[in-house]
Length: 238
Image (cartoon, rainbow, N blue to C red):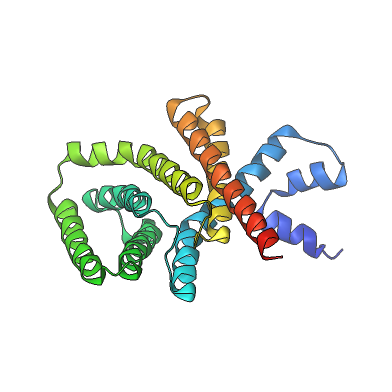
């Protein structure tokens, strides 16, 4: 008997055959299977967050020729947060394929900072920043002590949370979200929710889990701002 394309897709990417039969043949809401599927979906959103969020934001800035509304300090904090796992991977001699996506995200974030400075008339400052940052990353990757790397790694998530707070504040102060990419914010929100769900399943009510939940809540606030301000702007234009 030929396998249904839907079954083949679901079994290949989302669940084992046993779970497919429990959920779609027996129509039994099997809790372990539901958790398994949700973790798979959360993992996909986390991957999309890692690979696409900064790229989509970068493309929007280039397309519009403006970085209006983006908080420079928020993106600087993002750069630091994304730098931490890269420094950790380099100092621990992890193979490149294990953290190459982090390096790509890091490079995109650095370019976003350059573009923010460039579109504010500080191109030279942006170029000098890229040079200085590249040199600092080389020094950290080559000579950072275990204590420094440990502190960076543990401060990564709090820094990312702080960056979201700064962008939320900037949006509120400006009364608009400017060139903040709605797709980037949506994917970031989905990825943050995915991380919170996975952490909740694996670590329970730990401090890390609470931090992921706070980060997810702030991402939801950012998404709400994007939707509200875009809706408001459309009504004004009408």
